[in-house]
Image 1 (tube, rainbow over the protein chains, first blue to last red):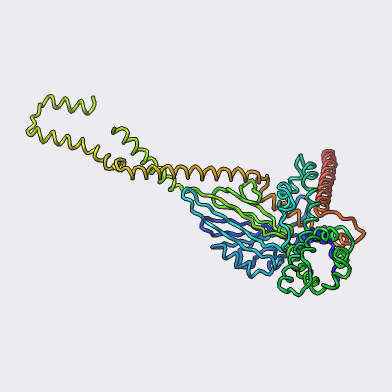
Image 2: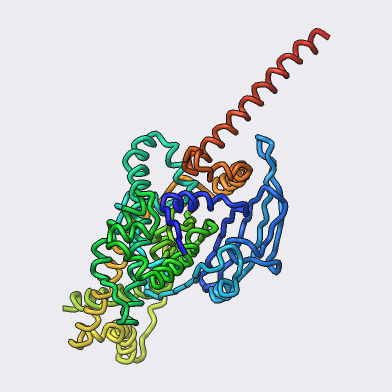
Length: 345
Length: 159
């Protein structure tokens, strides 16, 4: 079976898929110090029809649901469904993820909560984990720190950022190089994932006569050809690795391509959504974006989960006032002892 | 006249006789000594060398730990300041509402984006274009509305 792999087409499709006709979802997690989480899901749609079982995040009719609609200045009507549920622990959320069969069915998701006692403070850490789709290159290998900021930034924040005074500089110095590197990263990630799969198969079946080293050496060239030429993968492989290469290894290569395609679909078909988390106490660390009210925001879409596990974490601290008082009294007691001793002399 | 002066005055006037001078003296000395004994009991550890050193080390370790923890927390808070942006939940929801409308416009003509002879435009640019168009349309409608109002006001005045 011949498969046409056009990376530019895939890239375009990846962007177009984000505009599929499903409601936009905002997930709000209000994390409490005892590990319980109040989860609120806000779905916005142009129709007053919400299929909760086809949503980007797990939600069902047992949640506390309210509906409202909004008519904008421009006269457009949008409908909002808000679903709220209190979870005693993150296990409740993880249970939902394990039974979930909505629009992101193969996305591997997990929530974690940690509470660490550090005498003066108690540290809370909440993580929403999404597993990677393929074993490609992590974005950190291709993008610099500034580009990564925009790579992970939710679309609506990028748009807001591009309305600021220095937008042309940002576009020229960050966005455009990011878009150029994006295609290369995507192409090379797919190729390295494919080579990784071939390597695994060859190591299990030594009879297969494929030189992995040659494939690894040609990895960049294969990605380059797939990106910039109109050749399909059969001709790309043959032109770089010798005539008849694909044909002689067609069974293995077809299987690998089909596996990669299946894995890649998790990212390609990802129905994106936003997560907002409210932490107990004072926020001290996160890899998300912090809003005016101290809430942390991330966006989950196909790009960010393509080749690396995405751990959206927020860490906060709460001061243990009683520990401060006890410590203060103890230190004062010791100091007083020394003062008394000096005076006695 | 304070309490002490009043007591002294009374004593001078009455000139009381102390029957057992020695026991009275001992009683006074005992009461004065109680205070210093309490202090000795509370800070007696200062005379035990190993205990004194241990408590001093424990206090120093606690103070150092406290300082290190605070410095660590402050440096982490400084780091996250870079991630602070000017937005809030209401802005996100407003964008979400606008987004689903713009998406529905794109979807109405989705096939066109997949045709080989169509122009490739990034989703961002396309959505931006639609948003700008919708803004312009809203402004135009407002101008038309205000013109209508202006025209109707003089008519009313004439009437």
